[in-house]
Length: 108
Image (cartoon, rainbow, N blue to C red; front, side, top):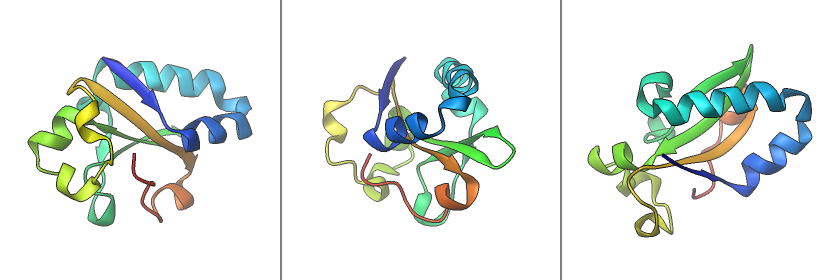
């Protein structure tokens, strides 16, 4: 499995550095089973998945293989979609629940 971390994800991890070990553990779990662990999001976030880190804190990611198979790549519209292998997991946002699910991630 190939992991890609967006700048937003990295910036947020720096901002919330106290959660670094928990986030690393969740990232490892996601990379082991990307579609078994996460909850698929709906509406304008279709194609993305969320995994809770703590009470109201989420990791938002997408798994390229599933995104393409379900046709969500036409909704997500990653500007560089074709340059990533199917086995890529893109970690796009990390943050409080109310921020993570209110606005769609910038093109992953």
